[in-house]
Structure formats: C-alpha cells, structure tokens
Image 1 (tube, protein in one colour):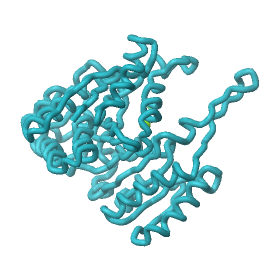
Image 2 (cartoon, helix red, strand yellow):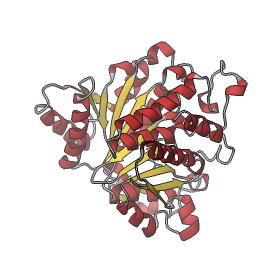
Image 3 (cartoon, protein in one colour):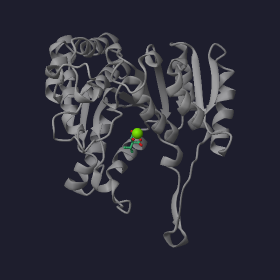
Image 4 (cartoon, rainbow, N blue to C red):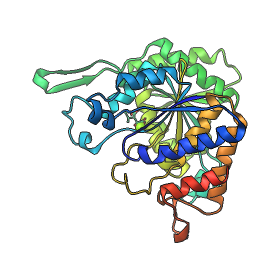
Length: 354
Ligand code: IPM
Ligand code: MG
C-alpha cells in the first residue's frame, strides 16, 4: 500500500496524524507492506510555494494507491472574497485531476452518540444513509464570469449525461447491496441541468428493476432528512446539493467530527473527513480525530478490499465510545468531565483498541 498523506490546513494537521497512525498499526498487525509519503496542499502550500496544489504533490498523488487528506481552508480567505489564489482551489484541482467523480459520504450514528446530536434520539435511532455526491461537475467547475464592470457574476451549473450516468450507476449498485432504495435529489422543477439529471436517472432505473427509485427536490430533501432520516437508504445528487445536504446530514451522525468520506473514480482513492479546517479550534488539541480514523476504515475497505481490517478500525472506535470517552464536539451533558479527551488522547485510545 503506497499512501500519500496530505494533512492540509487547520485541524487537518492535528487529526491526520491519528488517521496515519491507525493505518500504520493495522498494516503492521495484519502484515500488509505499507509506505507513506507526505504532500502539501491548501493554505500551507500557498504559504510555502504560492500554489495551493504544487505539481510535486499532484505527481505524488498520481503515483500513490490511496490518499489520506485532512482539511483545507483559512479564515483569511473567507473574509477576503477578492483573493485570486485560494486554498480550496487545491482540493478542487486534485479532485478533477484524479477523476474523483464519486464522493461517498456514509451517515451512520454510533448508538452511543444518540445524545450528541441536536436532533431527538427517537428520530435518529436506526438512521443509515449513504450519500453519493457527484464531485467533478456542476457549478463548481462550470464557467465563472464577471461582467458589467464586475457588477454581475455568474457560475454555470452544467451537467453532461455521462457524468450523471457514471455516478448514478455507482449509487444503483450500492443500493443493490443495501436496502435497495435510491433517492435522487435535484431541482428539476426549476433547473434544466436537473431535468437532464432526472431524465437520465429515470432511464437508468429501467436497468435496475430491483431498486425502488424516488426523485426528490432538494428543498424537500433538506426537510425530510431532519424530519425522518430513517426513510433514506442511498441518496445520489449533484455537487452543490450534495455539499450542502451532507453537512446537514452530519447532524444525523451526531457531529461533523464523526463523518468520513471516500472520493473515487478513475483510479486512486482519496479519503477525507467531511469537516473543514476549523481554524477557530485549530492548535488547541481539542479536534475530533475520529472522522480521519473512520476515513482510514473507508480506505481499507474501498481501495484495498480489506473488509476485516476496516471492521477492526470501526470496532475500535465503537469500543472507545462505549467506554464513555468523547472529544468535546460529541460530549453531552451526561459526559463525565474526566472522559472528555483531547485529540491525542482520543487517537491513542483508539490505537490501544486495535
Ligand atoms: C467539502 C468542502 C469543499 C467542497 C470545500 C472546502 C471546497 O466543503 O468537501 O464538502 O465544497 O466540496
Ligand atoms: Mg462541504
């Protein structure tokens, strides 16, 4: 296993250390040869080279079997919309260059965290959703323009049929191995690109008669997710809607700090927490490393087909949670103060269970 580690910005630096340690320990325990390289991307890369994705990082990425990424972004740019070079460009470019068109975001609540979410436990219990977010198209990559002396701006929302087909195909196949339900989310009552999306998914549904397909407008989906998350199995949607809905859905898993994601497509797999760089808590040692650790579980499963090893990682996280240990973001009023762990304590606790 040739792994490229890109810690990135903010808490990415703190949490990825533990993703990497967990991966090392698994490799060692199960006797899988592993080698690590490190790369820079995002704000740290801009500071060092002026480029959010240096060629050197991209070259290393292309040569690796899988990539473990941390987070990207810096408050400095969030407050400066005029900045031409931005950390996020690095992430978007690597997704495009590596052909990572399918972003899988599993939303599953560990029972122990029922109280950590702001949603009622009875609404959450049993929810288990797998998002397929399209990742290399949509307004993210459509033409961007300023006209009218800079006073009018546009981002083109564009999808081609083959882009919808390839992500939908992955979602249909995943549904087949789960509860056989697929919900496709769009805004076909308003957007032409969504009408193409819906048309394409409808056509494909004929090839998957065993899958129950539902089409939902994104505004309704946002509401249904919170109202009754249990009714969803697999959800497939475009880049922008998927970005927004998965942040919302993170509350179904208790906290953003718990959610891992896998981006796949042409060849290399790219694994990252869905949370951002969280500069407000960076450097304080309180970030939750579990999303990075669970991203490693996804990597073992998807890139290397090591199902048992992936399960060992998930069980280790489960055991630590069962013993009552929490980072701050997933602590509830009932959490004992001596069970609230720092980033490194939580990372070590999981390692000790492997
Ligand atoms: C995500 C993030 C990114 C996105 C940002 C950092 C560009 O929010 O991975 O969800 O919008 O895709
Ligand atoms: Mg996002």
